[in-house]
Image (tube, rainbow, N blue to C red):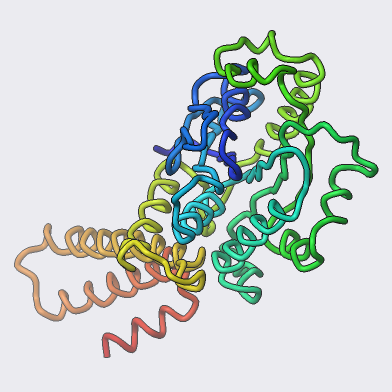
Amino acid sequence: ANHRFVLADSFGVTHNSTLLNLLQARRTSGFGVGHLMDPQTTGLWIWSRQHPRNSELTILLMDTEGLDAPHIPTWYHWILSAVALLTSSYFIYQTKGQIDAHAIERLSVILKVAEQLRGGRQLAQERAGHSTDKPSFLWLIRDHQLKMSRAPRQEMVDKLRPSDVSALGRYFADYDCFPLPRPVDREDQLQNVENMAYEELKADFKEEYCVLERQIFNAVNQTRHFGGRVLTGEVLAEMIEAYAKSVAGRDGIVKELTQLPTQWQMVAKISGERAVKLATKAYAGAMRDALDAALPVAERRIVDVHERAWADAVQLFCVEALVEEGIEAAAAATG
C-alpha cells in the first residue's frame, strides 16, 4: 500500500487501448481493443507495471471509456474526465487522423473540467507547502498520415483557440503533441491488430512508438504528490473513493460542470478524515500513558494531562488537515 505510484491515463476516442497495451509490455493485447461502434472499455480499467528505469516506482496505466462512446450522457464523461485528471501524472488525449474542429471541441470540454477540478483560476495557484503536482498533457494523434508543416506542438498551438492554449498552461505542467502513424497498412490487419505480435507492426510505426515510449517513461520518472503527500496506493485509493462518494452524494448525477467536486475539496476531505484519526489516537495514547500507571488520579492531575494532550492533538490535527487557522478555531470550539 505504501509503494510509490505514477499514473498514465489514456483518454479520448474509442479504440484507444492499443497504446496502453504496448506501454504495458510491448504487446498489442491486454486492454480490450474495439473495432465496432460499441467500446470495449467501459468506465476505467487499470493495469500496472514497474517503471523500466526506476524500480521504486510502479506505473499504473489507466484506460478510460471513449468520449465518442454512443448513448453515454455528458455528465458521465465529465466524471470520467475528472477522475482521470485528478489521478494522472501523464494525461494522454488520443484522437484519430488529424487535429480537427470536433477534436478541439472535445478538448475544450476536458479543459473546462480541469478548471472546475482545480477550483477555478484563483485556486490554480497551489497553497504553499501543500502542493499537488500538475500532470503533463500529451495530444496523441493516432493513425496520422498527413505531413505537418510545423513541429507537432506548434501545429497544435496554432490550431487551438488562444483560451484553450492558456488553459493548457494553467492546468498542466507541460503540454505536447505527438503524431503516430498507423501500425499496419491494410484495414483487415487493423481489425485484427490485437492478435499481431509487436514485431509484425510497421517499421515506421515501431520507430515512432519507441520515441513516444521513451518520452512517456521519462516524464513519469518522479513520484507525484497529492495534497502534500506522496502518491502511494493508499493515497490513490483514498482519493478515488472520496471523489466517488462525493459524486454519489449528488445522486450520482452532475447536471452542471460547477457541481463537480474540486481537487482542493478532495484534499481537504481526505486530510481532514486522516487528521481526525491521528489526533484522536494521539490524544487517547497520551491520556493512557500518563494516567494508567498512576491510578487512582486526582482530578487536577486529570485536567492537566487532558489540557496538554488536547493541545498536542489539536496541533497535530491542524498540521495533518492543512488547516491554517485551525488552532484558533479549535480553541474557540472548546471554550
